[in-house]
Length: 108
Image 1 (cartoon, rainbow, N blue to C red):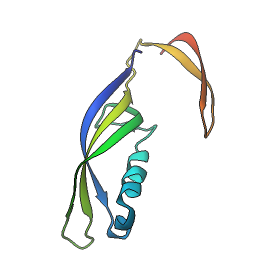
Image 2: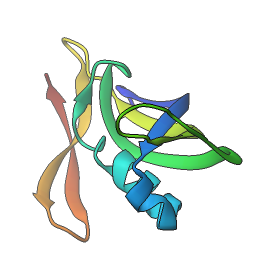
Image 3: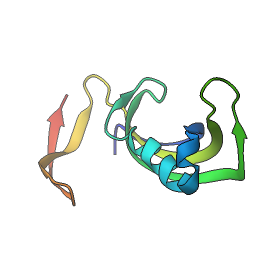
Image 4: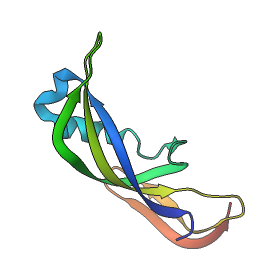
């Protein structure tokens, strides 16, 4: 579909020491904050992600508030519409559990 792309990204997530008990949950919480918002770094809206930690190590950053830096590899589904692009479907209803849409050509 036009406007959708998959991008491989090398990310670093900074985890607060109080969240090191469950690092995977902290990582998912941080990545979920990227969803459905335009991100200039990716030049689009992140619609979904699939994440794999690069390794099992985290680097502790020194300073007043030490954080753990965790390196990740992620596949991101990005929506990057351009001017005069034709969309193939539109949303009818968005709920917590699912999205309803129907196919219709619409020009941006």
